[in-house]
Image 1 (cartoon, rainbow, N blue to C red):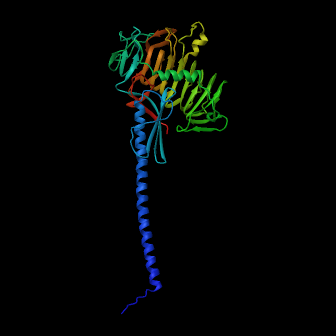
Image 2 (tube, one colour; image 1 turned 120 degrees about the vertical axis):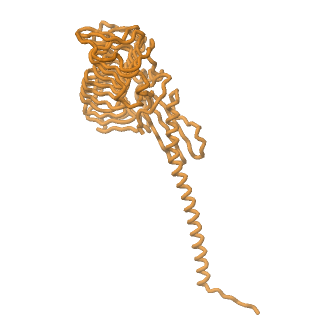
Length: 429
């Protein structure tokens, strides 16, 4: 006897529906699992991008040579993950960039880099050995580690004023050397290049200062700039970022300009009273900072004179007046003030003048003569001090001034010196 079973069409449709539903649920679960794993990997990759970028910056702090281009480094052995680094000179400091990539996600970090200065271990004063003792007069105070010539330190008299302190140096005294610690060669080469050769070649690298009141260029982009053979006046502008402005004649910065992180290059740079900002000024003849200015960290004033093959005419009073960095009363510079000459000359002229009630918080480096009437909080490296008082010139005298290491951060940075470790001064991206 044969048993015939008939399945109704509705039941068949229901069975197919259930099968399709189960298939869709399984496909959804598989897709969810894949998406979850993918997003987890992406999130982990993004976090690792940031961590690896920090490793890249650390490798740049240990790197001695500058990079001509962005270079891939292979100490990270991970699938789909790469890191590239680039180290270049940026004014008196260096610029380090790392780019990490996981699949299509990129992360960029950029920093301004300088020599590491530890406030309580680095020299507060390094006075070059010229066989001439340091003489302190008036209300002068030197606090910290002082590297001095063999003759040491004495008290003296200027215009009837003696030394009023209880100690000649409030800290340890060490013996200095016949040469100041040297800046890295790349620093000198770059300063020379900026002043003598730098020009904007490609049109896409050019910015028009008259195009807008606000001009910016990210440090993750290529450096852009403005160049003129004539004098440049910067006023009523906000300019920031990876930008170089150069004049073959002079640059004048008005107090209505707000400049951040860029470079100014000209033979003569004049900064008006009450100017604020964060920038580097690089000149070959003269830098004048007016009264009540406030330059934030890490700013820099560099006067670089390549006089190795030059014949200096000391009878020309106008020339002597130009060869100087002048910082007006009640101004503050947070960063570095540097005077460099390729051939040291023996004269009584003053290359850096810090006026009364002004302050430098950071580093002074001068292989000439430094006259200090205000306060340096940080460190001073100089060939000689000079005091112009009562119609006379007193060599290696410090009169009514303060050099101390108590009101600066425990760790900060300065210009790149040979054999010195480096640190990040500022993150710019």
